[in-house]
Length: 201
Image 1: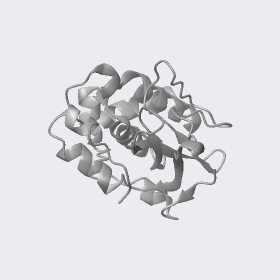
Image 2: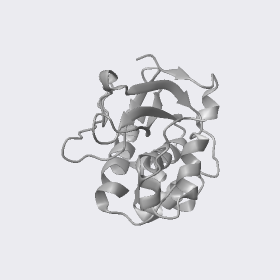
Image 3: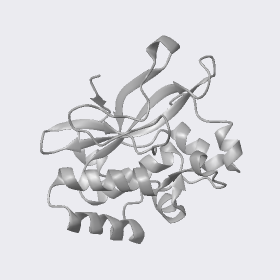
C-alpha cells in the first residue's frame, strides 16, 4: 500500500500538542533514556516501539478499568487501547526529533458480520532510508504478533478486504478528532469499548 502524508512538511509530524504532550517531564526522561542507549535512529525507533508495545498494556487485554488518551497519561497509567498507545509512541519519537504520524484501519472486532470500527497505529519516518513505515504498538497476545520490521510490515491485524475491512492510506499529523472524542468522553472503559469510533472526521 502506498502511504500518503496529510502534510508535506515533516515538521508537522514533530509538533507538541495537548494530546501528544512530548514536553511532559516523564516523557522527556524516557525519551532521553532511549536516545542515550541507541546510536542510530533505527535502533532508537525499535527500542521505543518495543517498549510501548510490550510494557504498556492494552486495556482490553489487561481488564483495565480506566480510559487514557493523552500520551503522558498513558505512560503514567501503563495502559491504553490502540489509539492511546499510538499517542505515547508518537510523543516519545517526536521528543527525539523523529517524525511520527497516525494511521488507521477499519476492522471487524469479532465475527465476520460485526460492525466495522477504527484501529489506530503509527507511521514513522526513517531518515536512513528516506521513507515512512507503519508500526503497530497495540500489544501482542495469542493470534497477534506485530513486529518491528523495515522491509515487510508486521502489523497486529491483516486487513481482510473480502470482509469489508480496509487500510486508510493517509498519514495524519494529528490523531483524528473522532478518536479523541471517544477517548475523552467515555465515562468508563466499558462505555468506550461499546462505542469505539467507526469513522474518521
